[in-house]
Amino acid sequence: MIDLVGRVLGTEQFRATASGYAALLAWMHRHGRLSRVRVEGTGAYSAGLVRLLRDEQVQVIEVDRPDRKTRRFQGKSDPIDTVQAARAALAGERTHPKQRNGQVEALRNLRVTQRSAVDQRADAAIPAVAVALRSLARRHQHLSTEIANLDELLEPLVAAINPALLAANSVGPDVTGQLLISAGENHDRLASEAAFAMPCGAAPIPATSGKTTRHRLDRDGDRQANAALYRVVLVWLR
Image 1 (cartoon, rainbow, N blue to C red):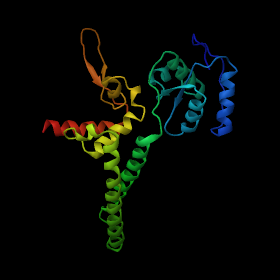
Image 2 (cartoon, helix red, strand yellow):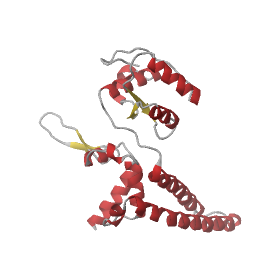
Image 3 (tube, rainbow, N blue to C red):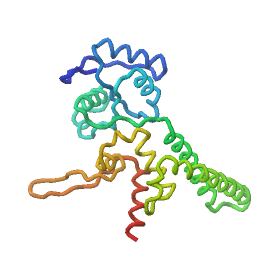
Image 4 (spheres, rainbow, N blue to C red):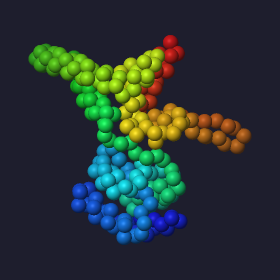
């Protein structure tokens, strides 16, 4: 916890359970009026905490991994990381986390299952000893059927969410689904094309030194979204 000028009011640890989240919220309120909370892993291991904070009308800010340069100077520990995250939230950096509900969340779950089936099918296609070939062939056939069934579910769902994106040149159901998931249900949090480019790992980062003005490509962000954009660009170039 920090105040409005960045002074540390206290650090504390809580269990990642419903009772722990409630104790965390009560502890924060004891320090005064709660402005905003910055959370790491909002769509994974911190999803339960984010739901509680939103139910309590607390503003939640997404946090990335701590800055490497800061870690080199200050070291690595949970208190150091949380203080750095709190000060970044105070400065208004980063965006609001994606909402994990609605049609886009259903689309995300289907795509996770589909990617898992595709990966396993690829493993089953690797040459094996003769005694295992029959088992691998059956698995390959079963996974192909599963992927086809998932594709039949994904395409109408993608079309219902954003038919205009699906109709764009070189943007099929797979690319559309990934871009929708990367944008999230509450896509209004991305106020511009630049705001969408950053989480997709497609934003130019200033790397100017002296009289040399140049940029480098941001390598952070959602690599699946970056791969989807890459496929679109390749088709356009062709």
